[in-house]
Amino acid sequence: MISVFGSKVGKEELDEIKTSIDNQWLGMGPKTKLFEDKFSSRLNLKGFTMLNSGSNSLYLALRLLDLPKDSEVIVPSFTWISCATTIVLNGCKPVFCDVDLETQNMSHDTVVPLITKKTKAIMVVHYAGKPVEMAGIKEFGLPILEDAAHAVDSKIDGKYCGSIGEIGIYSFDGIKNIAIGEAGGLTSNQEEIIEKAKKLRYCGIGKSGFEASAAKKRWWEYDVFDFFIKLLPDDIHASIGLAQLAKLDENQRVRKHIWEIYQRELSKLEWLYTPKDAEENEQHSYFTYFIRLKNNKRDELAQYLYDKNIYTTLRYQPLHLIPIYNSTHIRLKNSEILNETGLNIPIHPNLKDEEIEYIIDCIKKFGKKNNL
Ligand SMILES: Cc1ncc(COP(=O)(O)O)c(C=O)c1O
Image 1 (tube, rainbow, N blue to C red):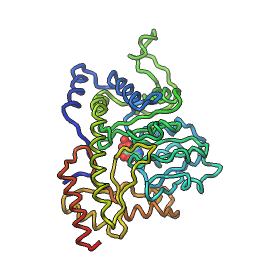
Image 2: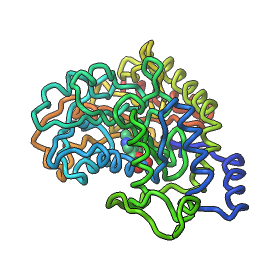
Image 3: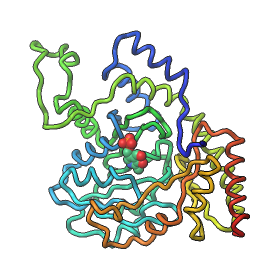
Image 4: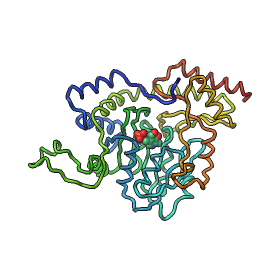
């Protein structure tokens, strides 16, 4: 089966892990610090706090925004569950906005009707790595939490996604552009927020006894800054991250290559829409390739490709339609259209040219078979 998402890992990752094993240091330590520094300088950030997942980064980011209880946070419906769940877990209310059909992104226009006195923040998601038009979102004057899980190599006007709002988060799960397994992290345009994240991530105690020993007499005692859970990264994951970071340019080149072939070949088909490219002032991350059908044959296409050993998926099932959020009564037209017509097809650095050709060929054959 050709997978829809994937990562490319190998000797470089193993070599990095080996040095941590040789040094008998598995937990958070020098590799984590090195990854944080290198990631931060690659994206020109004010700093970076590595954490153990993108979802947990969202959880901590919302905690750091310190919003009054019951605040409303606007979030696209067409996104991953943890975006809304972490809002609920921080005592606030997710208010789902629609997205633009062509970009799958929220916009100024989709947010406007939802602003109330209770709106205290906006969570932006750069879908597939196509940057959200941030100038329009900034006009609301509210704190912005940027979910750059898909957008680690995306830029607007020369600034990396994730570094534009108050807080930005990244995911490095096993299929992301930097694929570590389970990892993530956050940045901010304020250094004190990045430092506070470092203190909170270790049960709110800031430094381990070992780290604090240089400055303290009774080094086994610790200060507790705040009540918090443990979201610590570790040096094994950071080792993989270092190797992945070194490969990012090459992996992005491969993703862009696949994207361009799909754009060229699939745009010839009258019965589907290809995704939007980056604008002139933007850079895309090509995390996922999302097509939309102009007919009601999406499920049939997915099944046809599945039977040809090509795995596809839909990211995402709109959150307002999931009963737990108590929002099934609202209508978000575009998100619902995407739910019925959208399909993510394979793109990842392990995809071979002959597989890309095969996928395109199968999609074309499906069109012919159905007289589309
Ligand atoms: C848009 C978005 N936000 C957040 C996350 C959460 O990241 P993680 O899987 O590292 O928890 C994901 C994961 O797929 C995502 O796609």
